[in-house]
Image (tube, rainbow, N blue to C red; front, side):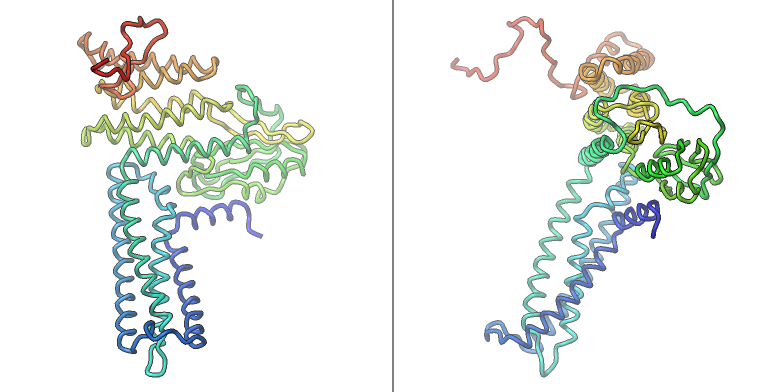
Length: 444
């Protein structure tokens, strides 16, 4: 039986693969060709649906060539997408792009239509013409053209930086929601990092090879700890890179599970994944924003748009417990597994530090950052307000350093949800005569 880590890596490979579904589509096309051939031999189609041998051969040959050309076009588009995303967005986003179902369905449709038409073409002879097969191949070819148009529309609209930021933000929010069912308990408060047992570990499980911790099988670790009556402490969290022969799990107690069983509960890979790592979603959003703020691009508006979706993700993170470490207990309440965790301060620092430094000279970015901090300050729990205040202080220091003119500094400190040009929020004590009456007509 495959270990959990091997199954996890297999699932990741299949989800990111661009060839698995097209190969399945080709196999389905061959099977459908067998079915259509059997129907052609069993059913007498009307005369208007019958084809001559030359007409059937020409149509099927044309469809086969068209599908090969369309497959090449989609591959070419995929290469261009990789180049554009790597240059203007973030190379780390490509892991999410490869998982998009649309391009896999399009490739599978083309491959299936190719296999179906080619299998029917081989059956055309003086004695037999697959009339149903030719008609179905024509319908599939027409459907493939529609799929191509949908695919072109999809990738042209979804490769804009703001669309990518929305996609990454939603993926991060799903990870946070899933994390509540595996690690976080409703009603948990902020915790201090769990203290390790005073005794020395009875076993240190070493990593056999280098890689980033992509995911942890929490239930498997908990089951091993209960079975051997021990405490398992992970030394590296999801997203951390571990070197060969470095400790990944420490076992405390009188007996220890097999090292291979514990290694099988940790999935290592060449890069981080987003499955259990909302910090990776924050990282991708920050990468897109600072690339837009680089001197080569100089596009602060894109950075502001990314901050919109970064604020949404931070708002979601602010609603869940984020202790320095997670302590998992068994049914009797005994501590069994200790996992490293990121605190709220860690996520906030990751999200804002580099954008603040790269956008220090942009009034638009500074104003949007102030508005983001205002929004978080009004929604986060009281024990997290200090981290938000610290980020505001750092932002003010950065503004003072970047803007020598007092008026420019005052402008950069004005919160604006659009960066520049947005409406000011109404305060509770604003005089009534300063509030515009919306909907009043000129005849009014």
